[in-house]
Amino acid sequence: MAGRYRRVGAGLLLLQILSLLQPLCVVWGLPVGSEGKTRRWLFVATHEIDRRDLWQSGGGRINILQNVVGKARAKVPRRSMILFSSENDDIKSSIASTWINRKKFFVAAVTLMLSSSILLEIYSRIGTLFIKDDSPGDKLLPPSVTSNIQHATLVFHGSGGQDAYTDALMEQLRKGDPSQYTQMVEWSLYSSNIFQASFNGERIGQLAAKELVDLFPKGNNLQTVHLIGVSVGCFAADGAARRLKQMLDESHGSSSSTRPFVQLTLLDPFTQRGIFGLGYGNRVFGVAADYTQQYLNTDDPVPSTNAPLLNSVCYDITNLRPENIFGHDWPVIYYCQSDQCGKVMVQKEQQQAVGSVVVL
Image (cartoon, rainbow, N blue to C red):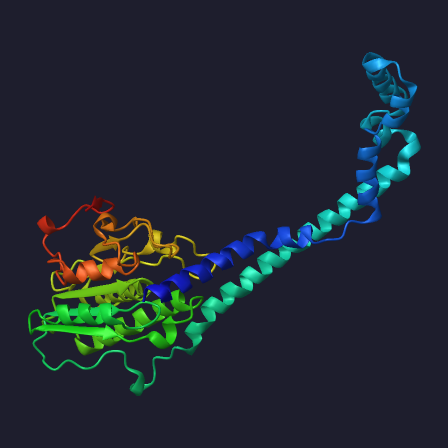
Protein backbone atom coordinates (compact mmCIF):
# COMPACT_ATOMS: atom_id res chain seq x y z
CA MET A 1 0.00 0.00 0.00
CA ALA A 2 2.83 2.37 0.81
CA GLY A 3 4.42 1.84 -2.59
CA ARG A 4 1.15 2.52 -4.37
CA TYR A 5 0.59 5.82 -2.56
CA ARG A 6 4.20 6.85 -3.21
CA ARG A 7 3.64 6.31 -6.94
CA VAL A 8 0.36 8.22 -6.86
CA GLY A 9 1.97 11.11 -4.96
CA ALA A 10 5.01 11.17 -7.22
CA GLY A 11 2.82 11.19 -10.32
CA LEU A 12 0.71 14.12 -9.14
CA LEU A 13 3.74 16.08 -7.97
CA LEU A 14 5.52 15.52 -11.30
CA LEU A 15 2.43 16.67 -13.17
CA GLN A 16 2.28 19.91 -11.19
CA ILE A 17 6.00 20.59 -11.67
CA LEU A 18 5.81 19.99 -15.43
CA SER A 19 2.79 22.29 -15.70
CA LEU A 20 4.72 25.07 -13.98
CA LEU A 21 7.92 24.57 -15.98
CA GLN A 22 6.30 24.08 -19.37
CA PRO A 23 6.44 27.72 -20.57
CA LEU A 24 9.99 28.13 -19.31
CA CYS A 25 11.13 25.01 -21.15
CA VAL A 26 9.60 26.23 -24.41
CA VAL A 27 11.17 29.69 -24.19
CA TRP A 28 14.54 28.38 -23.01
CA GLY A 29 14.70 25.99 -25.94
CA LEU A 30 14.16 28.67 -28.58
CA PRO A 31 17.14 29.37 -30.86
CA VAL A 32 18.70 32.81 -30.50
CA GLY A 33 18.54 34.70 -33.78
CA SER A 34 21.16 37.02 -35.25
CA GLU A 35 19.48 39.95 -33.52
CA GLY A 36 20.02 38.38 -30.11
CA LYS A 37 23.61 37.61 -30.98
CA THR A 38 24.07 41.22 -32.12
CA ARG A 39 22.75 42.46 -28.83
CA ARG A 40 25.13 40.26 -26.85
CA TRP A 41 28.03 41.27 -29.11
CA LEU A 42 27.21 44.94 -28.45
CA PHE A 43 27.34 44.38 -24.74
CA VAL A 44 30.77 42.77 -25.00
CA ALA A 45 32.07 45.31 -27.50
CA THR A 46 31.23 48.28 -25.31
CA HIS A 47 33.49 46.92 -22.59
CA GLU A 48 36.35 45.74 -24.76
CA ILE A 49 39.88 47.13 -24.34
CA ASP A 50 42.88 46.07 -26.35
CA ARG A 51 45.22 45.15 -23.51
CA ARG A 52 47.94 43.99 -25.88
CA ASP A 53 48.46 47.57 -27.14
CA LEU A 54 48.63 48.80 -23.57
CA TRP A 55 51.47 46.49 -22.61
CA GLN A 56 53.36 47.34 -25.81
CA SER A 57 53.16 51.07 -25.03
CA GLY A 58 54.92 50.49 -21.68
CA GLY A 59 55.25 53.14 -19.01
CA GLY A 60 54.65 51.17 -15.84
CA ARG A 61 51.49 50.28 -13.97
CA ILE A 62 50.29 53.87 -13.52
CA ASN A 63 50.62 54.62 -17.23
CA ILE A 64 48.89 51.36 -18.06
CA LEU A 65 45.99 52.30 -15.79
CA GLN A 66 45.78 55.76 -17.36
CA ASN A 67 45.83 54.23 -20.82
CA VAL A 68 43.04 51.84 -19.83
CA VAL A 69 40.86 54.71 -18.65
CA GLY A 70 41.72 56.86 -21.64
CA LYS A 71 41.04 54.18 -24.21
CA ALA A 72 37.84 53.18 -22.46
CA ARG A 73 36.61 56.78 -22.76
CA ALA A 74 37.91 57.39 -26.25
CA LYS A 75 37.15 54.09 -27.96
CA VAL A 76 34.13 52.77 -26.08
CA PRO A 77 31.02 54.88 -25.61
CA ARG A 78 28.53 53.84 -22.96
CA ARG A 79 25.93 51.19 -23.79
CA SER A 80 23.14 53.71 -23.69
CA MET A 81 24.89 55.87 -26.32
CA ILE A 82 25.17 52.93 -28.71
CA LEU A 83 21.60 51.67 -28.23
CA PHE A 84 19.87 55.04 -28.52
CA SER A 85 22.01 57.02 -30.96
CA SER A 86 20.54 57.89 -34.37
CA GLU A 87 23.35 56.00 -36.06
CA ASN A 88 22.15 52.69 -34.66
CA ASP A 89 18.49 52.61 -35.69
CA ASP A 90 18.98 49.24 -37.37
CA ILE A 91 20.37 47.79 -34.14
CA LYS A 92 17.44 49.17 -32.14
CA SER A 93 14.92 47.69 -34.55
CA SER A 94 16.69 44.33 -34.46
CA ILE A 95 16.61 44.23 -30.67
CA ALA A 96 12.95 45.27 -30.62
CA SER A 97 12.15 42.53 -33.12
CA THR A 98 13.91 39.96 -30.94
CA TRP A 99 11.94 41.08 -27.87
CA ILE A 100 8.63 40.90 -29.76
CA ASN A 101 9.41 37.38 -31.01
CA ARG A 102 10.34 36.24 -27.51
CA LYS A 103 7.14 37.75 -26.14
CA LYS A 104 5.07 35.93 -28.75
CA PHE A 105 6.72 32.63 -27.90
CA PHE A 106 6.16 33.19 -24.19
CA VAL A 107 2.47 33.95 -24.76
CA ALA A 108 2.20 30.82 -26.90
CA ALA A 109 3.86 28.74 -24.18
CA VAL A 110 1.50 30.04 -21.50
CA THR A 111 -1.46 29.39 -23.78
CA LEU A 112 -0.22 25.84 -24.36
CA MET A 113 0.14 25.27 -20.64
CA LEU A 114 -3.37 26.52 -19.90
CA SER A 115 -4.94 24.56 -22.73
CA SER A 116 -3.23 21.32 -21.67
CA SER A 117 -4.35 21.91 -18.08
CA ILE A 118 -7.92 22.49 -19.25
CA LEU A 119 -7.82 19.27 -21.27
CA LEU A 120 -6.59 17.36 -18.21
CA GLU A 121 -9.38 18.89 -16.13
CA ILE A 122 -11.95 17.74 -18.70
CA TYR A 123 -10.36 14.29 -18.69
CA SER A 124 -10.54 14.13 -14.90
CA ARG A 125 -14.30 14.85 -15.03
CA ILE A 126 -15.30 12.70 -17.97
CA GLY A 127 -15.01 9.40 -16.09
CA THR A 128 -18.25 10.09 -14.22
CA LEU A 129 -20.16 9.68 -17.50
CA PHE A 130 -19.36 5.97 -17.43
CA ILE A 131 -20.71 5.40 -13.91
CA LYS A 132 -24.34 4.45 -14.44
CA ASP A 133 -26.97 3.93 -11.77
CA ASP A 134 -29.68 2.12 -13.75
CA SER A 135 -28.19 -1.38 -13.83
CA PRO A 136 -29.66 -3.81 -11.24
CA GLY A 137 -26.50 -5.91 -11.34
CA ASP A 138 -24.26 -3.00 -10.38
CA LYS A 139 -25.61 -2.29 -6.90
CA LEU A 140 -22.98 -0.95 -4.50
CA LEU A 141 -24.72 -2.14 -1.34
CA PRO A 142 -26.11 -5.61 -0.58
CA PRO A 143 -29.54 -5.79 1.06
CA SER A 144 -29.77 -5.88 4.84
CA VAL A 145 -30.25 -9.28 6.47
CA THR A 146 -32.51 -7.78 9.12
CA SER A 147 -35.14 -5.07 9.26
CA ASN A 148 -34.11 -4.04 12.77
CA ILE A 149 -31.17 -1.85 11.68
CA GLN A 150 -30.52 1.25 13.80
CA HIS A 151 -26.99 2.18 12.69
CA ALA A 152 -25.45 2.07 9.21
CA THR A 153 -21.73 2.36 8.43
CA LEU A 154 -20.30 2.68 4.92
CA VAL A 155 -16.54 2.57 4.27
CA PHE A 156 -14.95 3.90 1.06
CA HIS A 157 -11.43 2.59 0.34
CA GLY A 158 -8.57 4.53 -1.26
CA SER A 159 -7.18 4.63 -4.79
CA GLY A 160 -5.92 1.07 -5.10
CA GLY A 161 -8.87 -0.79 -3.61
CA GLN A 162 -9.14 -2.86 -0.47
CA ASP A 163 -6.01 -4.09 1.32
CA ALA A 164 -4.94 -5.64 4.61
CA TYR A 165 -5.51 -2.40 6.50
CA THR A 166 -9.08 -1.90 5.28
CA ASP A 167 -9.79 -5.60 5.89
CA ALA A 168 -8.70 -5.18 9.51
CA LEU A 169 -10.84 -2.04 9.78
CA MET A 170 -13.94 -3.85 8.51
CA GLU A 171 -13.33 -6.74 10.90
CA GLN A 172 -13.13 -4.31 13.81
CA LEU A 173 -16.25 -2.39 12.77
CA ARG A 174 -18.31 -5.56 12.45
CA LYS A 175 -17.63 -6.54 16.05
CA GLY A 176 -20.26 -4.06 17.19
CA ASP A 177 -23.99 -4.21 17.70
CA PRO A 178 -25.82 -6.78 15.52
CA SER A 179 -28.36 -4.06 14.75
CA GLN A 180 -25.65 -2.30 12.73
CA TYR A 181 -25.37 -2.45 8.94
CA THR A 182 -21.65 -2.25 7.98
CA GLN A 183 -20.45 -2.42 4.37
CA MET A 184 -17.34 -1.66 2.36
CA VAL A 185 -18.24 0.13 -0.88
CA GLU A 186 -16.14 -1.51 -3.59
CA TRP A 187 -15.27 1.09 -6.24
CA SER A 188 -11.72 0.14 -7.26
CA LEU A 189 -12.75 0.13 -10.94
CA TYR A 190 -13.20 3.90 -10.69
CA SER A 191 -10.60 4.80 -8.05
CA SER A 192 -7.40 3.59 -9.71
CA ASN A 193 -7.14 6.50 -12.19
CA ILE A 194 -5.39 9.26 -10.23
CA PHE A 195 -6.80 12.00 -12.46
CA GLN A 196 -10.42 10.84 -12.29
CA ALA A 197 -10.64 9.32 -8.80
CA SER A 198 -11.85 12.48 -7.03
CA PHE A 199 -14.78 13.18 -9.35
CA ASN A 200 -15.55 9.46 -9.66
CA GLY A 201 -15.55 9.22 -5.88
CA GLU A 202 -18.14 11.96 -5.52
CA ARG A 203 -20.38 10.15 -8.01
CA ILE A 204 -19.94 6.79 -6.27
CA GLY A 205 -20.76 8.37 -2.91
CA GLN A 206 -23.97 9.88 -4.27
CA LEU A 207 -25.08 6.52 -5.66
CA ALA A 208 -24.25 4.73 -2.42
CA ALA A 209 -26.29 7.27 -0.45
CA LYS A 210 -29.28 6.75 -2.73
CA GLU A 211 -29.04 2.97 -2.34
CA LEU A 212 -28.80 3.33 1.44
CA VAL A 213 -31.96 5.43 1.57
CA ASP A 214 -33.71 2.87 -0.64
CA LEU A 215 -32.68 0.09 1.76
CA PHE A 216 -34.01 2.00 4.76
CA PRO A 217 -36.96 4.12 3.63
CA LYS A 218 -38.84 6.55 5.82
CA GLY A 219 -40.48 4.86 8.79
CA ASN A 220 -37.56 2.53 9.60
CA ASN A 221 -35.54 2.57 12.82
CA LEU A 222 -32.34 4.02 11.33
CA GLN A 223 -30.81 6.45 13.83
CA THR A 224 -27.23 7.09 12.64
CA VAL A 225 -25.24 6.91 9.41
CA HIS A 226 -21.45 6.73 9.72
CA LEU A 227 -19.47 7.41 6.52
CA ILE A 228 -15.74 6.54 6.62
CA GLY A 229 -13.38 7.60 3.84
CA VAL A 230 -9.77 6.55 3.27
CA SER A 231 -7.51 8.93 1.30
CA VAL A 232 -9.25 9.69 -2.03
CA GLY A 233 -12.19 7.66 -0.73
CA CYS A 234 -13.00 10.75 1.33
CA PHE A 235 -14.44 12.28 -1.85
CA ALA A 236 -16.88 9.38 -1.96
CA ALA A 237 -17.70 9.66 1.75
CA ASP A 238 -18.31 13.40 1.50
CA GLY A 239 -20.35 12.96 -1.69
CA ALA A 240 -22.51 10.45 0.17
CA ALA A 241 -22.95 12.89 3.07
CA ARG A 242 -24.11 15.68 0.76
CA ARG A 243 -26.56 13.43 -1.09
CA LEU A 244 -27.86 12.03 2.20
CA LYS A 245 -28.45 15.51 3.58
CA GLN A 246 -30.45 16.43 0.50
CA MET A 247 -32.57 13.26 0.56
CA LEU A 248 -33.12 13.21 4.32
CA ASP A 249 -34.12 16.87 4.34
CA GLU A 250 -36.72 16.08 1.69
CA SER A 251 -38.08 13.00 3.48
CA HIS A 252 -37.73 13.98 7.16
CA GLY A 253 -37.31 17.75 7.17
CA SER A 254 -34.09 19.55 8.05
CA SER A 255 -34.99 19.94 11.73
CA SER A 256 -36.91 16.71 12.27
CA SER A 257 -36.06 14.72 15.39
CA THR A 258 -36.53 11.49 13.42
CA ARG A 259 -33.82 12.41 10.94
CA PRO A 260 -30.75 10.10 11.20
CA PHE A 261 -27.52 11.64 12.54
CA VAL A 262 -24.79 11.68 9.84
CA GLN A 263 -21.10 11.51 10.83
CA LEU A 264 -18.04 11.69 8.59
CA THR A 265 -14.74 10.08 9.59
CA LEU A 266 -11.94 10.96 7.16
CA LEU A 267 -8.65 9.06 7.37
CA ASP A 268 -5.80 11.15 5.90
CA PRO A 269 -8.12 12.67 3.29
CA PHE A 270 -6.86 13.47 -0.19
CA THR A 271 -8.23 16.97 -0.93
CA GLN A 272 -7.28 17.93 -4.52
CA ARG A 273 -10.13 17.54 -6.99
CA GLY A 274 -9.02 17.21 -10.60
CA ILE A 275 -6.33 19.64 -11.81
CA PHE A 276 -7.64 23.02 -10.70
CA GLY A 277 -9.28 21.95 -7.44
CA LEU A 278 -6.32 22.53 -5.12
CA GLY A 279 -7.55 22.52 -1.53
CA TYR A 280 -11.11 21.69 -2.60
CA GLY A 281 -11.60 19.09 0.11
CA ASN A 282 -10.09 21.39 2.72
CA ARG A 283 -12.91 23.86 2.11
CA VAL A 284 -15.81 21.50 1.34
CA PHE A 285 -15.39 18.23 3.24
CA GLY A 286 -17.70 18.02 6.23
CA VAL A 287 -20.05 20.88 5.39
CA ALA A 288 -23.05 18.57 4.89
CA ALA A 289 -22.45 16.23 7.85
CA ASP A 290 -23.75 16.67 11.39
CA TYR A 291 -20.26 15.93 12.72
CA THR A 292 -16.91 15.43 10.96
CA GLN A 293 -13.64 14.12 12.35
CA GLN A 294 -10.30 13.82 10.58
CA TYR A 295 -7.31 11.65 11.47
CA LEU A 296 -4.21 13.30 10.04
CA ASN A 297 -0.59 12.42 9.32
CA THR A 298 1.44 15.47 8.25
CA ASP A 299 4.82 14.17 7.05
CA ASP A 300 4.04 11.77 4.21
CA PRO A 301 4.84 12.54 0.53
CA VAL A 302 1.27 12.13 -0.76
CA PRO A 303 0.21 15.64 -1.90
CA SER A 304 -2.84 17.47 -0.48
CA THR A 305 -3.15 15.17 2.55
CA ASN A 306 -1.09 16.99 5.17
CA ALA A 307 -3.29 19.82 6.49
CA PRO A 308 -6.32 20.06 8.80
CA LEU A 309 -9.74 20.52 7.21
CA LEU A 310 -11.71 23.66 7.93
CA ASN A 311 -15.02 21.98 8.76
CA SER A 312 -13.88 19.13 10.96
CA VAL A 313 -12.27 18.17 14.22
CA CYS A 314 -8.70 17.17 13.41
CA TYR A 315 -6.69 14.60 15.35
CA ASP A 316 -3.03 14.98 14.40
CA ILE A 317 -1.45 11.58 15.11
CA THR A 318 1.85 12.16 13.31
CA ASN A 319 3.95 12.00 16.49
CA LEU A 320 2.52 8.58 17.39
CA ARG A 321 3.50 6.87 14.14
CA PRO A 322 6.03 4.02 14.38
CA GLU A 323 9.01 4.44 12.07
CA ASN A 324 8.27 1.27 10.10
CA ILE A 325 4.79 2.42 9.02
CA PHE A 326 4.28 4.58 5.95
CA GLY A 327 2.75 7.91 6.95
CA HIS A 328 -0.29 7.82 4.66
CA ASP A 329 -1.26 4.37 5.97
CA TRP A 330 -0.99 5.38 9.61
CA PRO A 331 -4.42 7.03 10.13
CA VAL A 332 -6.23 3.85 8.99
CA ILE A 333 -4.09 1.69 11.27
CA TYR A 334 -4.42 4.04 14.23
CA TYR A 335 -8.18 4.43 13.91
CA CYS A 336 -8.66 0.67 13.59
CA GLN A 337 -6.71 0.08 16.82
CA SER A 338 -8.19 2.97 18.82
CA ASP A 339 -11.14 2.74 21.20
CA GLN A 340 -12.88 5.38 19.04
CA CYS A 341 -13.19 3.02 16.08
CA GLY A 342 -16.77 2.99 14.85
CA LYS A 343 -18.11 5.38 17.48
CA VAL A 344 -20.63 8.00 16.41
CA MET A 345 -20.55 11.22 18.43
CA VAL A 346 -24.26 11.91 18.68
CA GLN A 347 -24.16 13.59 22.08
CA LYS A 348 -22.91 17.17 22.23
CA GLU A 349 -20.66 16.42 25.21
CA GLN A 350 -18.81 13.86 23.07
CA GLN A 351 -18.01 16.36 20.33
CA GLN A 352 -15.06 18.70 19.87
CA ALA A 353 -15.44 22.21 18.45
CA VAL A 354 -15.40 22.41 14.65
CA GLY A 355 -12.03 23.66 13.42
CA SER A 356 -10.12 22.46 16.47
CA VAL A 357 -6.86 20.53 16.07
CA VAL A 358 -5.95 17.97 18.71
CA VAL A 359 -2.28 16.94 18.58
CA LEU A 360 -1.80 13.49 20.07
